[in-house]
Length: 197
Ligand SMILES: [Fe+2]
Ligand SMILES: [Fe+2]
Image (cartoon, rainbow, N blue to C red; front, top):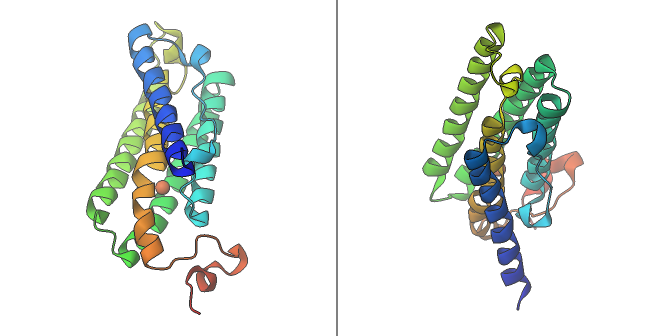
């Protein structure tokens, strides 16, 4: 079996395992404390384009810090700070990605951009709900004392995994066709991005 097929099967297994956890959480109503929905970085999450892969790794790190603040430290103020950081990085990452998609003439640019915009709207709504809920907590369920519940975290977890494994790699043929450098020197990235020779 060739390396490409193995990578595809590996990504499929990873996607299914995250989907399964999400489905089981819906059935069992497992709390965030027992579930700890961290994302384990895996090489099949790499699309092979250094700038976006680095940004994705940072997104995963920020997401994991959010899970830690909420589910382990149970620090609501820190959770909101981490969520704000996560939103800022998503905005920056999406702006970079959308510029690249436009430049290389990615045909599903509009649809992909809509996914980004929808996620930002959903997280901002989530943030507003959390702020409101923290002002008037309902103490019937232990998860309601935490800023975020496992369902909200699993939604973000699944979105990120799908974004890295399925959605973004679809741009790769366009990057290759436009002769973007897959790896470059970060110190001078703009000049180094294009293969000018
Ligand atoms: Fe994207
Ligand atoms: Fe991305």
